[in-house]
Length: 71
Image 1 (cartoon, one colour):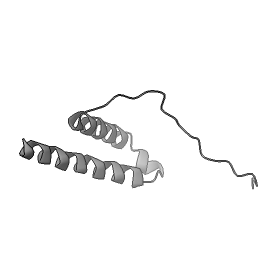
Image 2 (cartoon, helix red, strand yellow):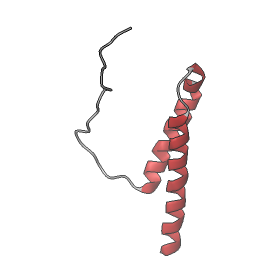
Image 3 (cartoon, rainbow, N blue to C red):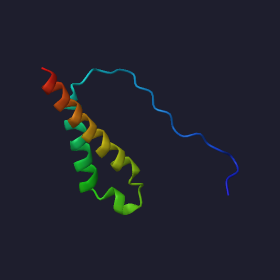
């Protein structure tokens, strides 16, 4: 067994651009469809990521509905 502890890989964004709630939701939904179509979770990956992204997508939908009602 390897005694040396290795920290997880750290990613750092080098640029960013703002997205609307609608575009963000579309990107998340597309990512989830692609991920599920590849059966990634059948290979032992944790379903927590999928679950959290689904919750985020649902929250974005609710936020968009609230914004439309406020207009």
